[in-house]
Amino acid sequence: MEDREIYIHIPFCVKKCDYCDFLSFTSDDATKRTYVDALKREIRADFDRSVKICSVFIGGGTPSILDGDMIKEILDTVREGFELTPDCEITIECNPGTLDQNKAKIYKACGINRISLGLQACDVLVLKSIGRIHTFADFLKSYELVRELGFDNINVDLMSALPGQDLDAYLAGLKKVISLEPEHISAYSLILEDGTKMGDHIENYKKLPDEEEERQMYHKTIELMREYGYDRYEISNYCKPGYECRHNIGYWTMREYYGFGLGASGFIGGKRSKNTDSMEAYLKGELKKWEQETGEDLMEEFVFLGLRMCKGISLSKFKAFFGQDCDKIYKDVIDKHIAGGLLEKKGDRLALTEKGMDLSNLVMSDFIITV
Image (cartoon, rainbow, N blue to C red; front, side):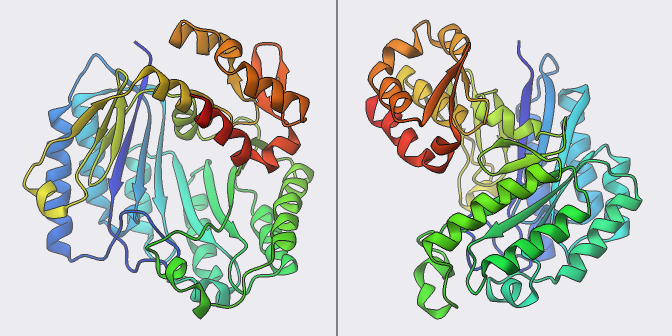
């Protein structure tokens, strides 16, 4: 059996950011305690000591809003029922303003070996305008704290094309982050989502960068990262050699994973699981809902997710999974985009070109339509 992954969702935040469409909200201490107990019950219901876990990702929300001892309880529960590989990657997402030395020491002691810090921007006015609770100084304090405690695998999240942000300010912020030499940087462009404060009321915010300036932010990010020794291994993710996020690569290559927590999804044995989004129902013990995916759904996901990575998809792995040739199923689409310079074949792999990365949504939508 191939190693599996675990995703654990912590839905609590100090304050919901204006752009955020994740399942997250504020809560009181009593609810947090009750939630952690329910989460541990859910994890125990799926115990399987025959399964090896190569990655655990504690995401949110803001996991670092919980007491450190609660995070330890959660990971202790995972270890009760699953065997973690010796090099298991264990990540926790942290926001500046919610992390302190006591929490960080507990993370280190309970085996967390990767910290993901949500900076998003360096400019204090931009941060305030999008609803972040911290400043760059707060971020720097958190970064230095975890570095001093010996964490040697740190990711920093950055966003571009934010209200009131111009190219020069964005690049200055990016250079600040690069100068800290984190092992991994995720650099995403803002996407306005319906149902978010920003998505529904963008007219109340400062002007967004225009399409040309947003494009320059994207390309300058690629150039700067390359210049300073960061490998681009996925559309929006960069790392020093050997520091790719194992957990995300697992998603993109369709590794099986458990999803624990409110609203969490999982993927085991060709079936997708989905937890309720209702806190009341979750605390009462509502079980996962499972849905068998069709072969066509799985093929679509294999290609759609795999093409996010710069190295693309393995054609031989596609055939091993599905018993059919990707070249034959998607012949027209592949031929079209190779001819247009958006796809390329390199031995066993099919990947987006640099131009194709720029137009990835166009390419991927063709694969979805074809299935």
